[in-house]
Amino acid sequence: MGRKIRAKSLAFNMTKSSIANSMTLHLAMESLLMKILPLGWAITYGKNT
Image (cartoon, rainbow, N blue to C red; front, side, top):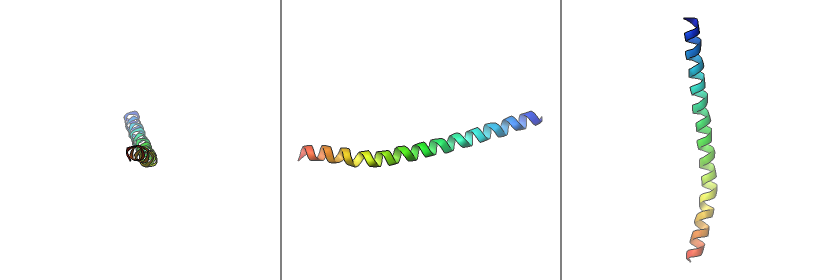
């Protein structure tokens, strides 16, 4: 009985940490995109004009 509860809370903690990790990863990707996108846009726009 006690082991089941412990496993459940462990799984919950793992899920929580993986969600937190994916959120930070998402934020990092977003900030990276915000850095890359204007650069790429400037290059393509510069080529067109």
